[in-house]
Amino acid sequence: MPSGPTHEGGHSLISSAGFENRDLALEGDLMAMGLWNRIYGILMGVAAVCLGVAAMAAAGHANPGAGVVAAVVLGAVALLCWAVGDGVSKLMEWARVVSMVLCGLGALAQVLKLFTGKGSEKLVALLTLVYLAYQATILSKASAICTESYRDAVATSGIKASPYKSVAFFWLPMVGLILVVVGVMLIGFAAAAMHSH
Image: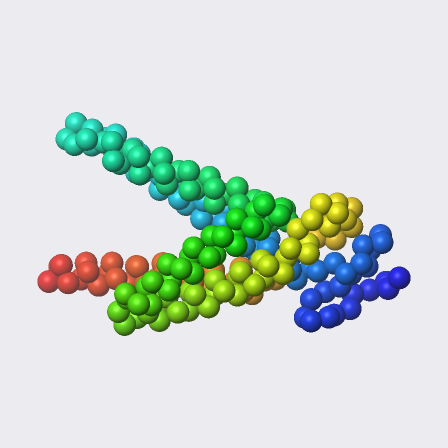
């Protein structure tokens, strides 16, 4: 049995305690996907609470029903996002399948934007579509490691994969988030400057 790592197709193969052909890179990709799903779930959960509180606060001036329903729906989506993220990180097959379905729905939305969007919207939709297609490809390949026997072997191997080594599914979304935040701040500053004049 080999005592050290080798490389095949860019993925690490490790033999440990009888566990051969472990794919640490693929595990890291799924852990990164799961991490961001949980972060999105938390953000949507906070948004759902704020929306619900705002709807109830406006109860004296308007019917809060629509706001409350929207908050409940958003909260349910947040819980689903968190659960799927947790499942993907733990290499659960059901979470992998749900993630692929969500990728498909997201891709369909981007295709629609390609036909209905204008200018930069089409470029963003195209880039997002390519990213979702790549993510779906990785999730499809992950069927080989989302099994009970593989999870049991991981639990006893003593070796942990890292989501922070995934360029495509940890660092790329991180850069995207930073750009969005910076963009929103710049737009806000520009709007405030225009208003002051």
